[in-house]
Image (cartoon, rainbow, N blue to C red):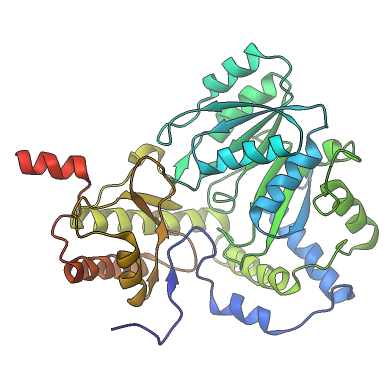
Length: 383
């Protein structure tokens, strides 16, 4: 039977399930130039910056649109037009950063590992030492296509030692995985409203080193995605340059109030870790195997191998689980059939247990007797 008495639980990496208080904040209309709304924007910027302890060195520049808008704005503003960017790739979002860098006319180099292999500081050091013309390094902290966590502190140290600039896509890690600007050197770090702060989607933000941003006038090849102009206008007027996502901003403000009241980043990480452990354990009991080894798995989103059973089809599997109240995410890998389950949002281990039960019921309905991936299923059969 379909569950229509509440919104489905979004087991996705954003949009995600939000609290009632966050949803309720969007029920009021705001004037985009009104002083009260401008005060909310200022408060949100301050609260976000405090999460990474960057008040003394960085400014928070909000940007309309999805997280990718802000990644593009960061690269397009921070990197001079004659700059040379090394993008570190082990998944789809690294490839996206490389693509947008090249499309904006910046010189591009890449260092790519397999989807289940983290980039290391030694990898970065070798690449930078081999090409002194590289000016900037682009890193995906938590690669959402798999859930792999790349070693940001170590990579940041390798970049800083060589006098290069680091741009971090922290879309899926900010607010959950600890990042401290006093200890980790970055010139830009990008995140968004609809991730681990548990706000609605529609707004990104970039923490930019003030001394760097002050020198970035004229770098951008885009009018709307110019972080320098956005920052300068906001500093001068307290307003956004163009129509802001007002409802998203005030909902993010509400989400930040809850974030702080619940214990901030350490508490958020603890809850997501419990969610992830509950999910992996429960799915393992059904026969599912994660794509990543546990030591490189961030507690943000888990990629599972699809069952080898011939009766499995993701579309039907997805729809049946959705009818039980849970939204899953398709796989992002090209070589293997997988699906993903998010551990973030205004949910806890109880919801994860219910999700596993929904998957179990779906397997029974579809007549799938073996949830293990092909290699594991073959080994079981051979034994």
